Image (cartoon, rainbow, N blue to C red; front, side, top):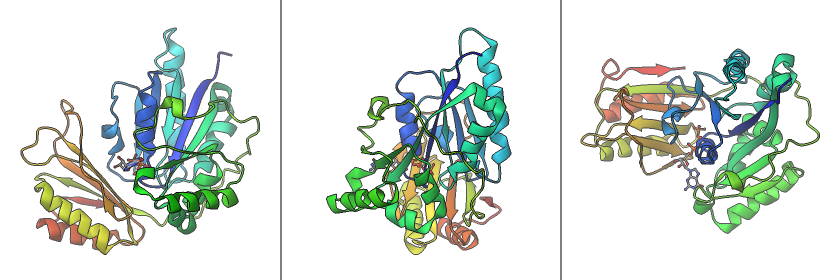
Length: 324
Ligand SMILES: Nc1nc2c(ncn2[C@@H]2O[C@H](COP(=O)(O)OP(=O)(O)OP(=O)(O)O)[C@@H](O)[C@H]2O)c(=O)[nH]1
C-alpha cells in the first residue's frame, strides 16, 4: 500500500474565515486538491480562491453532513483514482472546506470508518475557525457550531482586528471551559499562512465518530442571479438594510458581483450584521458575468427575498430567486 494522502478539514460557522484560511494554506505551494461544500445552491467560494488551476470539487446545495452526505465518498474515490494513475502526483494533500452549518461528525465518519477510504486517506488535522466577535453567540445558539468546536484539533480564532481585548479574553475563557483540551491560536487574516498552523501530525488518539447527524438544520438559503447589477451604493444600502432589519435571522450574505463600469468582479461578504467592503477579484475568462448572491437565513427566506427584490426595484421574473 502506498502512502496515505493527508487530508485537512477546515470547518467553522458561517463567515468565520474558512475560505480565508484555505486561501492562505494554498499559498504555501504544496500541490493541493480542494473539496468545497457550500450550503447555498449557488456556489460562490470557488471564485474566492486566489489559486484556480488546482483540482477542485464543489459540492453545493446542502451540507456534507446530511443532504449531500453521500457525495463525499465518490468524490474522494475519484480523486484517489486521479492520484494513483500517474507517477507524477497531481496533488500531495486534500483540503476539505465544510459548509458553515455542517456538523463535521458525519464527514469524519466517512473519512475514518469507510474502509476503502481509511486505507488511502489520513485525516491529518481538523481546524475550526471561530470569529472572535460572534463566536460565543453562535456557539450558544447553534448546535452545528458546538459540534464544529467539539471535533476540532485546533481552534483558530479569527477577526481579532474587529474584536476588543475583552471579547478576546471572554472567548478564551469560554473555550477553556467548553473545549479545555483543544489548543487555540489567534491569527488575523494578514498573519495567516501555512506556517501559522502548529503541528500537522494527527493526534495519537481520535474519538470514533458515531456517524450521527444532528437534528435537521433550520437554516434556509436563497440564491439570486442578477442580469443587471445596481450601482454599489444601491446594492450596499440594500444589503446593509437587510442585515440590520433581519439581524437575528439573516446570518450570512456572500456573492460575486459585477458592479457597473468595473471590469473585474467583486466579492461581497455580510456576516453578523456587518457588511464587509467589497474585495476585487481577478477577472476570470469565460465566466458568467451575472452577479450572484447567496443569503442564508435561519427561518424566513421568503420575507428576505421579497424585501431584497423590493429594494432592488426589480421583479422576481427579472431576477430569478431560488429558495431552498
Ligand atoms: N477583518 C477581518 N476580516 C476577516 C478576517 N478573516 C476573514 N475575514 C473576512 O470575513 C469574511 C468572511 O470570510 P470567509 O473566509 O469567506 O468566511 P467563511 O467561513 O469561508 O464563510 P462561509 O463559507 O460563508 O461559511 C470575508 O470578508 C473575509 O475577508 C479577519 O481576521 N479580519
